[in-house]
Length: 209
Length: 209
Image (tube, rainbow over all chains, first blue to last red):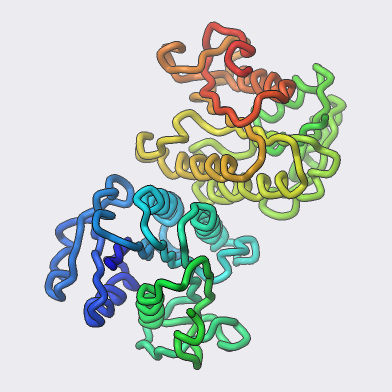
């Protein structure tokens, strides 16, 4: 069971690939260029070159499921939001469907279901995430949508919450997102589910099951 | 059979509303504010206030089909592309479906099916149109997608082509788009069809049927 990681060179992507490698969970890291390869090769992580704004279909060969953690967060320009978070997500879901992959795991964002409730500056980004999520739900693929809160660079507490009331806050460390992602990848029975993910007090298996 | 016009205050929207009014085809023009109303009232065209980035669901009351000609073309900022061309299109399609409208007629763009073949600067806009079209196709609504070429301000020739070879060019006047739109609105038997629309040599009934 090999997992293709789209957006492997991002902050969450790298942490997830490293965790997966340490856990003996096979991953293939899709990267944009050979210049990004050494970090992965030093850690024994398989890579494949693919361009999310161009050709990437070959990267799916031999993969059983896919993780989408490409993109930008709300602070990249909206041109990239359209090309990566929206169109890249749609195209990869369509390829995953065509190739019969067993599951598509999307890193979305908290409150992506309600873009108009976001602060005005973040609404275009949230609209892209909303549309990508809708497309995935309608794709016919088995999917999991993870919706992390505001991302921080704290260490992994490995403790989670999945409501704002429970968390008392709206943040989560990238390390915790990577950890939750690995748990999801290793739990193939979880399909067609969506989870808000925040730092909290509970083990991940209590939330994603 | 009343047609709700979303984006009525745009260049194509205004020309279409005026043509429809002259033809005795009932339309309701959705406009953003009372300040936009006089132009329509002078011509006896019904209006309703609705905000495509806010509340607009009430505008659908009493309407049987909808025309979406809001948005921007590729030269508006990508923030508006995300909020109007993408998210506005998705939300209006979802409301049309919920309210049981008989048809959704979308003004898309030539080559919206292949954003990566567009010049690089236009790709984000084309990606938004691509995603809006996909959502409409998957919505369960009866739909028509019109894909005009590069828009000009020429008078209506009322003559069309629907391939680049046939047209020998890639342009169409806004007046011709409005004319084709009226034909489509008046031809309810046309459903689940997509048409490239260019200036040419044939009557519209030869193409949209």
